[in-house]
Length: 244
Ligand SMILES: [Zn+2]
Image 1 (tube, helix red, strand yellow):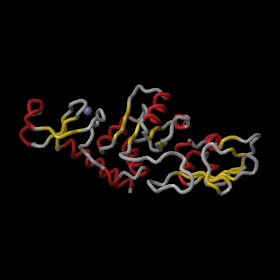
Image 2 (image 1 turned 120 degrees about the vertical axis):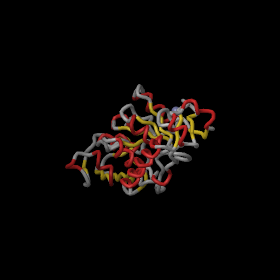
Image 3 (image 1 turned 30 degrees about the vertical axis):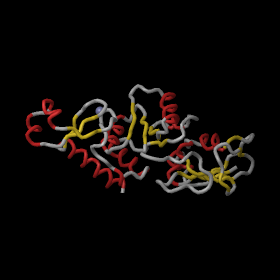
């Protein structure tokens, strides 16, 4: 049988197997999901599968002379043919593996719901991403291949700022940034708070120069439009430019 991977799915293949039709012989028919993952591509990265030109789901048995074509998602464009997973509705929700703490913080500062725990096991991450319908972001391809993971993305970049730009681009989020919506430390929502209620916790300079404050509804951390938020906005502006 033969298989062709399109666009960024080639990132998972050895260099000499990219952008070309791969021919494999199989002893017995198996699911197209196992076949694709055996070639190195985790199933959450796949948005559309064609077997002999017809849309197929992950359970489709393939073997013999079958021709398989595999496509990634293209941003938020609807996928033609057979949907491989339910539509993702509402606010984007992410779950990050233990190595992506800085990226989790950046996503929160951009206003996105980004769950993260530095002690989560792979099994717990896979189960939580499914139960909470969160896209699992990871640098671990093996984690993405776990059966329970429905939505996920292998983060290609290794540096946090570049990772932020990559995720904004991949999930088409650049026009949905909302700084001062979430706490970078704990992912809690921020709400406006009266200066009087928190004045005793502010450094004197901040108390003199600022009037508008937000407080995390979970951990209580206070945010204001000062140098801190200016740095966040600078970071996001750079990420958006890089994502474009
Ligand atoms: Zn917080």
